[in-house]
Image (tube, rainbow, N blue to C red; front, side):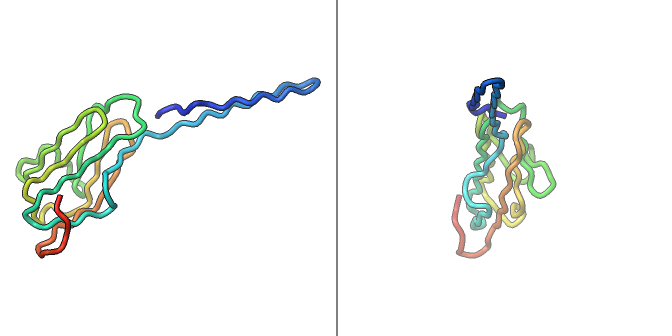
Length: 128
């Protein structure tokens, strides 16, 4: 969590002093850039970018899941993951129907984020 500057108010009366302190914290969270659903043409590159917001330190790890399966090290599905202090990028160089599903970016120190990916056989969709 990240501390946001606190607000302090002091009310002084004849016999009483009241001090109120308001301190707000923001929860660290992941965000996958773009809309909640992504449509990609089969054979195109699938690229998902996960940004870590409001973190006070780098995560020990960032795991990516497709549906319920962790895919960071899944060479059979041509998945490459690169991460740094505040960003993790998942890349599939040649997406096909098996890459459709619910993708989740799960950092060790932040609330996860998800996106639904549709791999399309036809001409519709956006690349990348």
